[in-house]
Image (cartoon, rainbow over the protein chains, first blue to last red):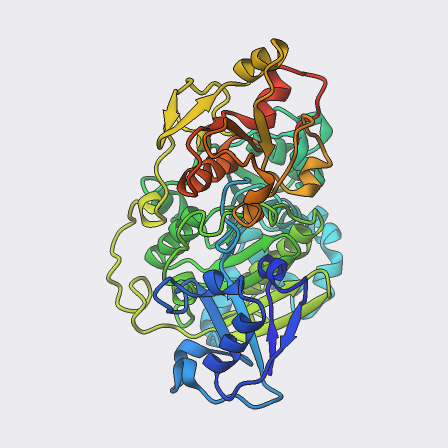
Length: 100
Length: 409
């Protein structure tokens, strides 16, 4: 599957806009992403290993939270995951707020 | 669809267009989707632009040009020259003026018929409902999470649609929230991010053109809502990537559990600073340096001794050579620096071998305004360094008070 990386997180993916990973579910895809780019771990997951609540993950056009299988939803090879952080003008949830 | 009798009644109530207006809006009038009635609807419409910055500038300009009768502007700021890279409603001549006054000059210059209502205030829980109730559509062009949630909740409570736009670096988002049938901002983002989650400032900044792109999308949505044409971005989130020039839309669902628009648990506005985990501004502390020019000097913040720029200068003048480290990013170092080594905050803990081997040696950390270097100081203290100082005010204070020939950014 292809994962779309938002600009604030591209610093952790060697500036890659999209990353192709293997995995049968949303969770497996994200785990593969983190395995390739370990710095993504703290950005996507809480210390307890839960997906951070203000980071939305979409499978194709749909919010994973509203899929019946949620993060365990099955993913096909040509599916696309999109990570959507909350952004607010000068601030982004993934980039701190110290340089306004 | 509006029933025929309502339609006639509404049309009769709409303000008439003068001959001058008919000539001015002729390119609208010959579009059947707008026509006389649509132009009259625009004339009758009242739109509130929250913020007259990067997004609010093109938004208010195009709405004014299009013939929206009343434009409300909420902003408490004054125009700074660094705004002009993107905030095209302001100009060289209005630097230093209140943004609402500056914007009014430009809007009236564009269209003499527009009624500009200025709200020279910070939007707060205390005034938002009162301000919003005078308008038909709200356009959120703010730059912080607290105000995003405030605007959203106030829109839900007053039943006003929110033409939402947001930008960051090269990326934008747009949607229409808080319509009766559609989702609201809280359906998409139930919780705000904790402040300063990732201590990186490398990701700041915005491409000046991007708010133009996104602000014009917001303006388009506002016009569609007023005219009742097309398919507004209700239940859809538009993602704009200026680097790839990619536009994608994702489906948004109304969350039945949403405390704002689902369960209606939120019956009044709350304290959004608290909700977003942001302490109200105080007079001291390194985080406030950039917003409060005259910060009272404090000796210590969270156990980190604060050094003034004067003290560092005096130390250097008498020949002392403490280890001073700039923790900003390379592209910032390239703009201006004070000739000390540099390791970005984000990579600091992985590069401790570049610091003095003696963990008791004096280390002074410097950044742009003192906030990142404070974080870096705490990280070094955590790593066992015992004599770490934060340069209060950072290189901005140095440029203000020690070497005024240095540029500030």
